[in-house]
Image (cartoon, rainbow, N blue to C red):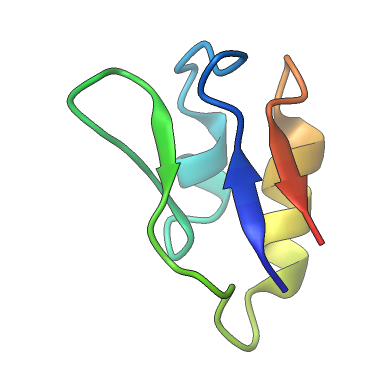
Length: 62
């Protein structure tokens, strides 16, 4: 499973790393970035929850 953050859409709200810090983190540019590719075993549901929680739908997990 892979996660992707659309950098043009991301508003840097910080929800995704708070839901799934194993996959997402905020970088110095103020936007979320994927830090685990592929999504580690056992964190698929958390990664999907982070994507569903994104207020601007900037995250894809598939």
